[in-house]
Image 1 (tube, one colour):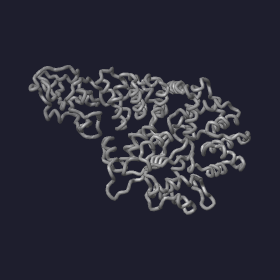
Image 2: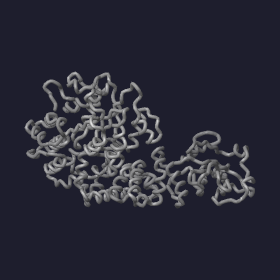
Image 3: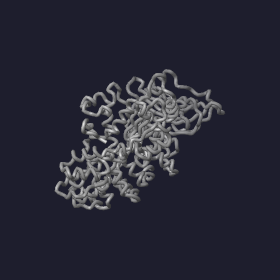
Length: 604
């Protein structure tokens, strides 16, 4: 409840004093407050707003903009306390979130197992547990279909809640709150459900309605019927959009707010829902360019909705907001609106997503560079639509899609298909073994294409024309496990060969023609290594690490090529005429470096 007879409500929240008192006690670490608090409630109940307002009271700079003296002192954490660590889960995989937390806690871990072990260890003597806040778990993950909230609860929140080093406050959906409570020791966790007593705040809801609507009687009825702050907000915006329509019916939830607004506008509610569907079916928080809105809405409806969209300002106004950027774009005002729209699709959701995926594919330009020229929305969001629409496997045969699609989301989607037993196309299997490298290094399209070109050759797949200027062209690759060194050499007949050392093999040296990959027979003792003078005359030099090789111009400057391997390299060398020789866990290969001065003089 919110008592405004003595103290003023929080200026950003407008109420929720009972919940604020609980959060303040948690921050101060009082004996009656549990180690972990799970903030939950229905979507649109105001969890994010409450948590944001609470964090404003924890942050010294934000407190200066608030008249703290006018608030209930029990809702305000002690001013000497530092702000807690905050890790927004929105759009992050569980692994990404876990590493963000452990890095901030100063844990020197290189593997997930090490991070979890360090979290479970007692804190250093004399050091209190660190307060950690994790907002927006309902928006965790890179793809909605993969249930990021459940993985985040299991792989991040549970270890944090059990850790003696951490005091946790997390904003979670009810399902995850129940799951965590079942696994945490009794008395160590408290659930603050904003829809349930004592945390519900009907007085605060009335204050919100009175502030949003200038009709006192209407405001009171609206607050009495509405299930939460978002429903009040949508009803108020509906009234502003069409002030002359009737106001005798009050929405109880987001779905009714949508349907009643369509009725007040004199439009079929199904038309409103179809127009908003592209925004609802995009990724969480994604913005939809205006140029794509009409084509996607028309695909959903199966008929042209361009005119309805163009004339639908009053109809759509309460439910979307404009987003500044390179191109005008829109997004829904709240995830609960998206959830309501998606739920109403029911069993036809798969077909709707399939239609949107095909409509996005229709926007691709012609030509071999169609994926590099695709709109950013297509490269980023097509993955989710195609996955839910059941057409992602069809796209995975296209190396251009594998190369230019957003890599973190694509990796999550392909791993999901593989875990479900789907038969992946051969190029996708090759890409998938490189995906951890691509997402870890955040490599751009050209280095991704170069590494994928090499890996496709390793896997015996046809060469692909990516339409990009790559730093090399893989001449050949041969399977040869166990190599711990390679060297460029010259056979007695003048053939340039790759010599690979395999400990324990008989013979221990394997020889290959550098240009063709054909096995070479002969006595390794008869091989000639390039002389120091030849090395000095070569325009290239190497620098090597455990899993990478950089090729530099002899006379300095930037690297002309960088090869990064998903596993440790067994060796690397470069011939005097510019062929990079490599050994990794799969075998040996030769890559013709694309260096103009070298290519023009090699004759190969």
